[in-house]
Image 1 (tube, rainbow, N blue to C red):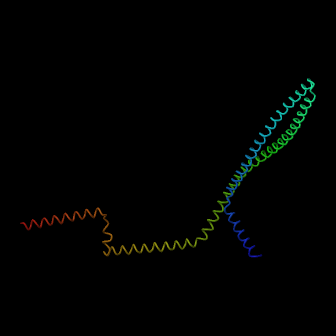
Image 2: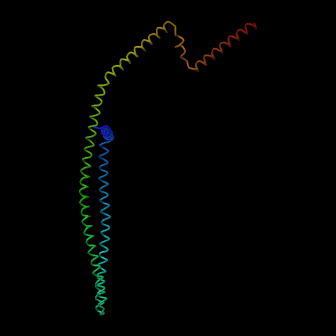
Image 3: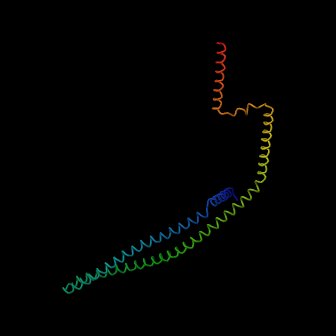
Amino acid sequence: MGIVSRLKNVFGAKLEKGLNALENPKEMLDYSLVKMEEGLHALTRNATELGTAKKRLELQRETLKATIRKYEEQAQKALEFGQEDLAKEALTRKLETEQRITGLDAQIADMNGHLQKIAKSQEELRYKIQNFRSRKEELKAIYAASQAQLKVKELVSSVGLEAESIGRTVERAEARIQEMQAKGKAIDELVDQGLITEVFADTQDDIDRKLKKLNANSAVEAELERLKKGLAG
């Protein structure tokens, strides 16, 4: 096999895989139903258009039949007046009109045949749509169940594959907890020894500190006042 052929096979396989991944059975089923319903609507529109055209031909045929009766009356009157040539002309036109009616009859018969075929196609398509609609829901339910089963299998496999990683995570967490506990105990010992008392003593917020400073200033002022009075005495 040549390189080009091999490349075509490789790219073809990857494209097929990508398309399969993009296809969603639920969406494909819904889309298929929509297309079938669109086909039924198209048949209905064609039947309406064809029926309308047939009705126009039937009306035209009735008009021509009335024209034939008129030509017969004209030929009769022409003979009454002894105008044989005029009677022949009227009868000639009558014959031409009858030929037109024959053509219309053939077209109308052909349209009736098409309308019957459309009606049969509509009936068959309605039946297919009805069956497909119920079957579609069954297939969607089966697909949903298959998806759920597949997810369960994937989760079980994932848990099995990640068990070792989870164990290492637990070990790291335990080591971290032990480190924090050791650090807490060390801090407690340092506090007991009075080495880091100031770190935990300052638990006041800024308002408490300001109030404390004001109290200290008041005490200083009071002491200063007392000294002044002593000197004055």
